[in-house]
Length: 451
Image 1: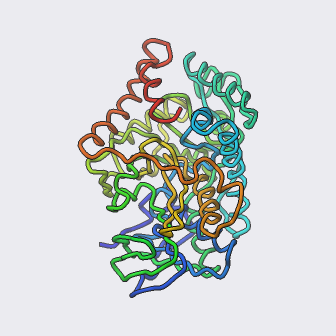
Image 2: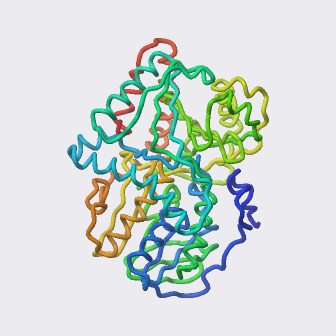
Image 3: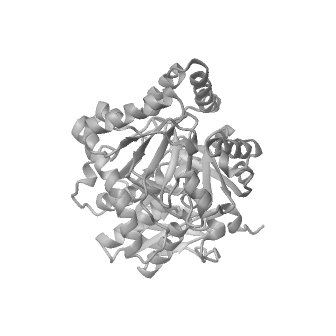
């Protein structure tokens, strides 16, 4: 049965693109670089490889269409967030390495906008920063601690802001290092720009397995000098990477457009993203056409790291999201939800993203972004391009390079642990509401998630 790709998300429904699949691989192929996965990690890697060496022959192998997965369905935050906090990185690698990683992430926010502009892609890029609301004294203490930590490191320019009455917040933090974008416009536009540079994208081409310098697909064998594994959460569907990443679902809604006068009352400007300090994560932005695009966690992990289309939609989670949005901004009243969608993101066992390359096997890999991939994929692409082409740069010395995360436990431990973690975050929010003190549960979980 043919897939209607416009139904994947609000972003896919509104991208100026027919979303017609490109031609599939038709027989065996020889190339310099084979990239498994047509999302942003793979496409950015191809983009920067062509910058380093325009003569490289590159093939992208995609089971569906470019941008089918998280790259086309996410919250549209191009942020400087990294799954591991700066303090956690400092404990593992030292202060200078941690600060280098932070600086690289901050610079990446601007690089995404600049690279898209140079490729002639309109992605609704607007760098308006992130407002994180503090809606209780416990959350306000967390906001103050975050701002103080940023000041102590001297890299960020986070600031503490006063009450935000529209969101029922007694205060907020503001991080200027975030842009809102239309993610499907980015990933689809980048694919077209790559084709103009000579990269061939084979869609409807399922990869079955890979080994050093060889990729087996359902449509033929690919011989290559380098393989880039760029599957993020979908890495759980392949034997070689099944326990390397856990697919955790995040779901979103988009409202009907709101009037400018209502947005003035809400206080969210174009280009701004927003969140708050609850533990069961929420995230949102004001879209270019004046909608709320709002998402959050809460969907359960599925046995065996399975990924199925029906998991993209959970009425229970969608109801939770609409209720949470209404609680944040009561003035929106009964505004209708126009679109509902979701999909899996990738989580490494230690919540530590990585960009790796083994010259001996010619296999590169990047992922484990834990939902912070819209910008981190660009840094991954630049880093892998430098590693593959043996380019000496500051990027190849960043602490995430060649980091090896532990494998996820086999079932049933993986199922029990992942869903217990989700339940713990919900319990932590309840605990703070009841006790008006920082959650002990959240503190224990923080040791596992790098905070």
